[in-house]
Length: 284
Image 1 (tube, rainbow, N blue to C red):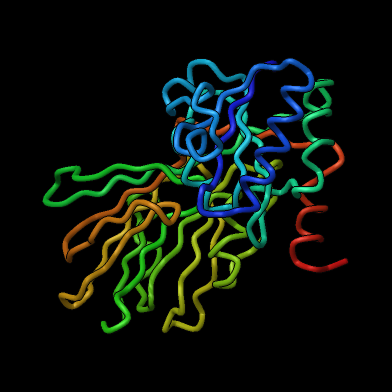
Image 2 (image 1 turned 180 degrees about the vertical axis):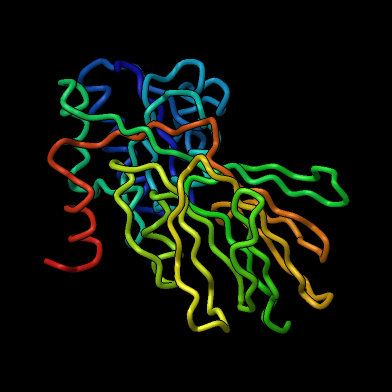
């Protein structure tokens, strides 16, 4: 992989510092690279600027410098492209951007020496229906979250799997996540941690269910989830990866299944999923 592209969170000063170090590394070795155009302008490197379409056509791999939010937002441009992404963490936890800033040079050298792994991460597809018509469709690498308005009453949720009613409960909402997203919102709501490298699955985690017996479920990525919401007329939002929101009204149906598209992520061989869990959750 010879040509990299840099995507930088332009709101974080540390991200620019890290980007400059990467640029210096490339230039010292006469390696070509691209920079997403907004960051290229800020870094005074307009001769290297590229929009997402050009990056998708010309980059061999992509370095995303920011937090997990930056990674999630940027990654949606490259779903199904087979271009691998490397996340450099200048955020907080950093489960997706699991390479720390001080590891940048080591990471670049390992990639240059073909000493890396590429993991294929599953995604979920979300289709939103109203009056039997599809009104929205989206993908999620982490999760799709249905949440009530803070001023509204609890939601009444009907959960179907493969057209069979599995549960009918009241609560604040529902999280449907991938194994990658098991360390995100689902974890804080009591869901299990799933190693995304080992299994393709879909995780269903209720948010503050009124039914105390209700627990998270893990199902096959080949199964289809159908959700109906009764919100007593209040606003309900469905959100894919914290970036794409749709308003859900009574009578709408949300269908969720494993997507036919995947995302490629670069992993360094000395950093396992369990290493990341241990470091990020302060277990060592």
